[in-house]
Image 1 (cartoon, rainbow, N blue to C red):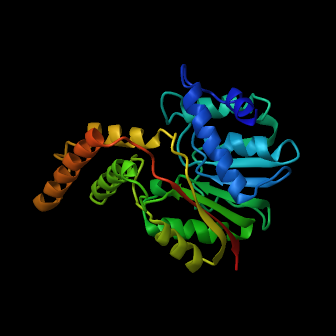
Image 2: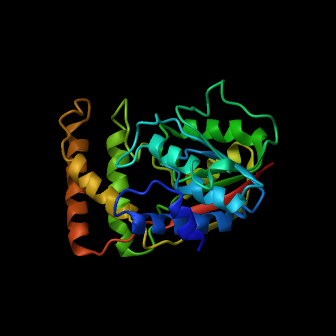
Length: 279
């Protein structure tokens, strides 16, 4: 019932109800793992089109609140833009406990909250969009004073089954390509492993209290990343500064991805998640 109610509050593209159901079920698994409950005050960084935002708003109820921040413009995204998704959610029964701010760089001096404003700070499935390790460290450092618990989730690069291999290979190709780009709107700009994130969290003053692996095999993200990689990453002509040997490596990886897609059924990577508190 919760999933159905949440999906009804979202701007679902025509025929996309089943896709959204699966995405929402995954977000509810994460929220349950993090221990977020009714009445909580939540800050969500990198809220995007609101997949997690809507699930959070449902969970905290009208006694709680969710503020979502995203650096993108409202016109970003397809087939539903971020602005359209946010407007639809705001007009739904979940709108009263929800606020979304776009074009909002969390590292800007203009973005700040009083100490202890939030019970939870959520950073979910958005770390790979960041431009560097230093950016993630800076965010983890800045947000410490705003809330008591950091709730993190990202795809787990430690593949567990051969069906996850194509998804991993797709994001690996993207991350290699991004090393030679100065400007990007790609889904994967910096590939963080769970070990990387743990190290950065600890180095910035967070103490991980609970961590785990969330498995949601129905998620479509693996298939999306594979098809996008094969359609958009074959043309390397614009990478004029890339050594020929690196271009050859990328071509080889793309061929491996094509072969893997044809030989194996596709499952998404699992999700690495943790809850941390300030030391």
